Length: 242
Image (spheres, rainbow, N blue to C red):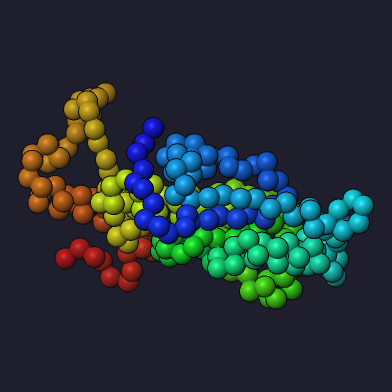
C-alpha cells in the first residue's frame, strides 16, 4: 500500500458523474494508486443516475430528434433537473459535457481542472443531448479524441484520471510528472531499465555514463526527434533545436 500525505485541510478533489450506467464506476479509477488515493481521501467520486429524473412510469429520458433522423436524443426536461440537483451537491465545480465535438482534452486542460475543486461531468448516450441544455446550463464541451464512442462514461473516466494523477501526493514525485509527455510541449523521451542487454539490444551508453548534463541533453534531443516525427503539430512553426 502506498503512503499518502496527511490532508492539508483542503476538501478532497471531487468528481460527480451524471450517467445512465453508474455501475460502470469506479472501474479503472478504483485500482492502483488512484484507487488507493481515493481510499485515503485525496479525491472523491460520486455518480448520479440520470434515469432518476426520467418522465412517467417508465422513467423516459430520451426522444426522437426534432426534424427527423436516426437515433434518440436525451431530453432537456430530464437533464435540466438532473444538472440542477448535481449543482446542489457540487456548487463550485465546472459543468462539463463529454462530447466528440468538444474542445480537446489536453494536459493543460487537465492541469487547470486539477487545481480546482473538482468536476461535474455529464456522460451522454445515443445521438447526444438537447442543445438547449448546453446553452442554458453553460456546459463546457470536452472531447478525448476524434472518434465516437457509445457513451460518455469512458471519456469521463479518462478526464478524471488525467486530473486526479496531478493532485499532489497521488503519484508521488513531482519531478516525475514534470518530465512526462506534453508537460514540456514535447513527447517524452525513451525510458530504459535493467537488464543492460536484452534480445541483443543495449541501453544507450550515455544513460550509464553518470554525466547528468549529457544525459539531460540526450533526453531533450530524443524528445524533440520523437515529437517532430510523430506530433509535428506540437513543435510550432519553427524547429525547437538550434
